[in-house]
Image 1: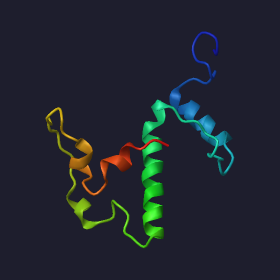
Image 2: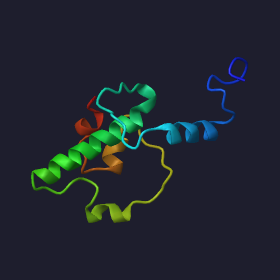
Image 3: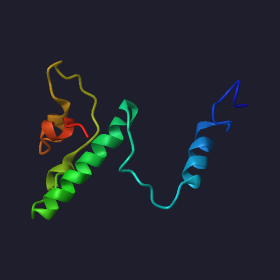
Length: 102
């Protein structure tokens, strides 16, 4: 099965994911990990979590816990090409914090 169909030899993406999750150690060492462009969501989430931790350590309130987020809802809207969707969705998170690289 590995040669003609899938490199892992495991049939189906869900089963592949489960096999990897179950074979992992309880805590993964991530300091030497090299994430690529496909993991951009993970990179950004870790960055925002790290920023929140640093904000709390400094005695501040991290982004995303204020009452301003209670009014968020799903919407479909066509924005102008030069609009910054990040500023529209999360105005209290500065764009430069979102776009920094690891």
